[in-house]
Every structure is written in C-alpha cells, then in structure tokens.
Image (cartoon, rainbow, N blue to C red; front, side, top):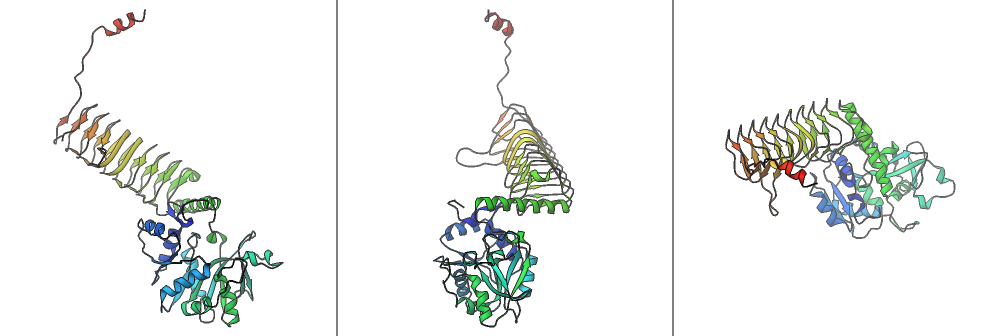
Length: 427
C-alpha cells in the first residue's frame, strides 16, 4: 500500500477493510470469533474501539505464511471441536450466503472445503487443480505454477472451511518447501488427498473474492462497493438523481421515499427517515435526519446531530452535536454546535453558536417557537426560552427568558450630511 498504516486499516465505505470481514462473519453467529494480527496489534486494538465487535485477538509473532497464522489460531482455540471458517481482512466482499454454502459443502466425506472462482484473467491467483467437478486434487500458488497450469481459470480465494480436528491434523504437516519459503494454508488440499480425505470446492462470483493489496486495488474496490450500495438503495425505494455522484458508508440506513440530489457524500453512522430530501452538495456523517426534512444544498451535518421531522436546514449551514426538534429551520449561513433547539424555532442567517472558549465546549439551549435574529452570536453556555427572540446583530451572553427579546448592540447614530462632506473631499 506504500503507507504507514497497516493494510487492513485502510477504509472502504467509511470502515476499515477488516471490519467488512468481521461484519459478514458476525452474521454466521459463530461460537468463537478470532482475529489474527501481527506487528500491527496496537493499531488494530485502537481501531476496534470504534466498533460494536469484540473478537478474540491472536498474535502471530512471526509472519510465516497463512498456514502458520491458522496454526496460531487453532492453538488458541484449544480443544474446540467444531467447524472453522478462515477469512481474510483484505477480502471484504464475500457474502454470508456464500459462506453458508461453503459450510454446507464441508461434510464427513469432504471435511475441507475451499472457496474458488472462475475468471478470464487469473493473473497472480493460485489455481485449483481438480480431480473431478467438485473435488480438489491440489492448489498451486502462482509462483509455483508448472508449464501449462497458468492457463487454468479456476482460482483460489484463500477462504476455507474445515472441521477443527482435521484442520489441526493437516496444518501440523505443512512445510516451507515452496518459492516463498512460507507455510501455505493451500497445501492442506494436497495433504488431504494423500490422507484419503475429501477436499471440495464451492464456486462464487469473482467480485466476492476481490483482494486488496495496492491503493489502486482499494480505489477499484471502493467503486464496486459504491455501485452495490447504490443498487441496494434504488431497490429499497430511495431516489438517487445522480447515482454515480452519491457516496455511502457500509452502515448507511435510508428509508424509502427519500430523494438524494447530485453530489451528496454520506459518511459513517447516518440514518435518514422517509420523505426526507438531501439536496445537492451536502455532507452528512454520524447524524439522524427525520421524516420530511430538507437538508442542503451545501449543508454539512456532523457527528452527534439529530434533526427531527419537517425541519429545514439550508445552504452553508454546519451543525455539530446538536438535537434539533421538529419543524425548526436554519435556512442559511449558520453554525450550530453543542446545542438543543426546540420545535418550530427559526435560526436567522449568519447566526453563530459560540460553543468553544478555547479550552472547553459549552451548550446552548433554545426553546420552542423562538426566533433567533440574523447575525446573532450566542455565547455558550446560554439558554433562550420558549417563544423568545433575539434582535438581529446581537451578541447574547445572558439567558433570555420565555417570551422576552434579547438585544445587545451599539446604539445607532446618524451623521446628517455626511455623504456631501465625503464627496467634497474627493475634489
């Protein structure tokens, strides 16, 4: 990746690569959930704190290949007696349904099953050599291909399922007699055949097996992810006026009858209810948008924000960590931060919530049916009551009671005849 970050911490759809694999594997409801790491353990653990998942961490002290990694995991499992599925943190698109088929193929007569795919461009993938249509004789890594084997189009994804006791038996026999000098997990296919153990193959689409090794791979994978997410949204009744310019995260939740205009970016943690409209050039992250609300154009809604139903958030409005109740409007040129705003309140143009004193963040609370005049500065912490107002151009640093008008600005003074005096000075 030519990056200081571990590969699996690079993001796809707003989440680290490894999270996509964990997200899918959690759907299988496994008894044990192990994640094998190496030198990147500290970074991985720090990243996991963001998410609702808690796999058991297994450290592979020396990176001696995939077979060695699985051996470390099997040692950690101790006497576990059950089915083991091996997935990869850089292969994010495999589907739950595919894994269910893979597990079903793993039987008493075929205690090991690999996931394979057909491709017209096999490139550097390992090849599956079959005895018959569904039984694997051996798996050959690209570096070890013999003349003629490079034309084989049935490739190995690396994903495998096996009965734990059989996997332990086979992994213990692995050696490093190959071009890379590593313990190849794929060698268990040939070892199984030698031991008269069946090894089957389950075929999936090539897209599911996409692996990510470079920044170019990551960019291509992002394109695949977004295309799949757009299709999902359209199928669920969301109108994307310009699908190719709309971007989603893995956890995006949008109900039907939502309209999304062109050039909208939706980051992690966004939920949008039915009837809402997200107008052009809007950026959303970590927020909730209520029914029939209109957001944008050119709005930025940041993490920790909840916007109720029938709200209007207009152009060049930025909102951060705010709870905005139903029917409230902030139509343009406003910053709202660390706030609670009641129902049917209007926030005038140019209003700034001054929530940061240079050391701490402070909260602003505004009641129902209130009116904040244009170009008001609200110096937090402060409260504006129900049915209250602030005069345009005011700097408000004291609470405004229910039904009151808060005003704080210099008295206007008119200088009669000033224009003529000014013009005379130009001569």
